[in-house]
Image (cartoon, rainbow, N blue to C red; front, side):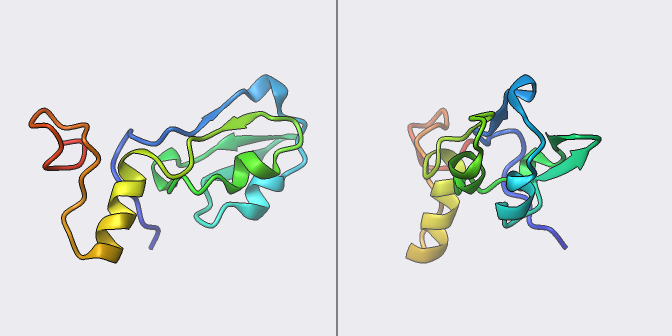
Length: 100
């Protein structure tokens, strides 16, 4: 089973017109966010992204962008390690919950 984080919060974006079809993103992504379609990569399941940044760092065409280590994905990971409730400061109450 694939682990999804929070729906529609990842900072991952792709400039499809820049993709050269090398497939590096499909090789380095630990959660299978990308797939090859024809001769180009595409984002198959964006909500699987944990914002690690491996795809953007390995894309020779600079077709991918992700703000690694920010936002709700980082807050969830920090919460796991610290044993605290995730907080990223984006909720209406000033940050007591993550994107709630």
